[in-house]
Amino acid sequence: MRERVPDDVVEDILARLPVKSLTRFRCVSKSCNSIITDTTFINKHVKLNLNQSESSISANTHSGYLLYTTEDKDGSSSSKELCTVVCNNDRTLTQVSRFEIPSFFDKYMIVAFCNGLFCLASRKKELCHIIYLWNPSIRMYKKLVATRFNRKKNERAAIGFAYDSLNNDFKILRIVCNVMFNESEAEAEIYTLSSDSWRKCVISMQSLKGCEVTEPKLGTISFVRGPFRFYNGALHALAYTSGYFFILSFDISDESFHEIMMPHNHLDGVCINFIELEVYKGLLADFVFACDHGNERGGRILCHIWIMEKYGVAKSWTRKFVIPMEWVWAGNFFGCTNNGELLIKNATGLVSIDPESQNQNILDIEDANWVAFSTNSMESLVLLDEGSFITQNVYREREREREREREREEEEEEEKKNSNVCSMDDLGSASGIGGGLDSGSNGDCHSRATS
Picture 1 (tube, rainbow, N blue to C red):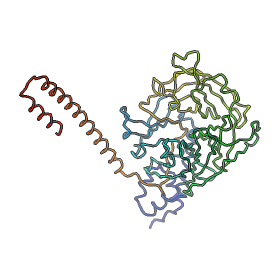
Picture 2 (tube, rainbow, N blue to C red; picture 1 turned 180 degrees about the horizontal axis):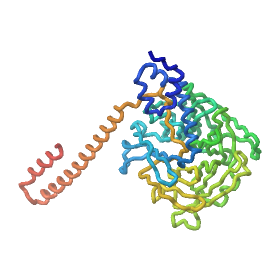
Picture 3 (cartoon, rainbow, N blue to C red; picture 1 turned 180 degrees about the vertical axis):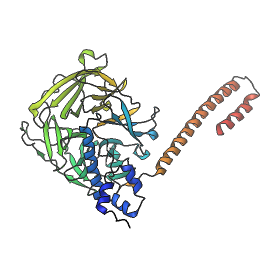
């Protein structure tokens, strides 16, 4: 008889396989299913995938990935898809994956993603306490119900999502504040996937090690603009207090808040359109989109790019570029690629702009309404042990909804045509034309309307 392969060897072999193969192997035997759905195995699989992704980046075989959601040109929410393409070194794009987005996510948007897991939330006040974690690779999701703070109106939640590699855990930071700038105190809570629970935390500021504290002690935070950006092991977002803006950072491992000062003169003499925090070539960056006073009628704006040369040190902020470009709305700026190109949706479509040469490259992506750049595109088994499965029935129901919607549109179009026929017949009888057709016309119209 053949010798039985030790369990630890089997586990090590399985941990190196792609997600698609592992989901199939669950049906091989009870022991295989038990291994693959075990939390320890899932965590091991995540770490191995991360290492593999880092090796791929160092090999310089490509320049990263673009993730985007798309929908039909008619704006139908029932046809959204999540797509991933690899950015080849010759500037071409190759599709890697394509997933349907379940219809019950229609009222939600992707606020962050990491290691194959997506975090979705809603801008609507009545839904701001509902958050979804979604793993499209295994078609699993998890619904999270956050705390409903006692705020009667104007509530807004800023959300950050990241993977804590030190503690091997996924975490969500949620800060709720009042958008009316009435100095009401912001409230914060943290969710950890390992404990599957929320807990409140106090926003107590600390200065970063080796950094000078040049501003007075922070008062009450009245506004935090999400979603957060993950950089250098921490989540970052623009915040407002006591008459000035600053960067609120949250260390994802030790769960401490820090204050980072903005450039002191970054808003001098500019008429702000919007401000975004991003990562530019491995450094924290402040993007200020402002009106171009010299070309207001031309519908152009200026993008001021400030780079923080030394993390946490306010004096290291340097303005690197001022780029003239077509008018851009806040929702149409999607950050930067690894090589520093800006991802923007303008009248031309989705483009990348090189700040140094200011050359514009048109990307072969149509009908994208959300875009993000990622250095890796890994799949994971996270949520396999505790998520809810998105069954094929969900997608079948979507197709039925789309068919019913088409039928309704056809019926409405037919009713409009019949309505026009009726009005012309009525007009004819009212003018005394075709007298004997009055009853016949009405009868014909009624039959058409009810067919």
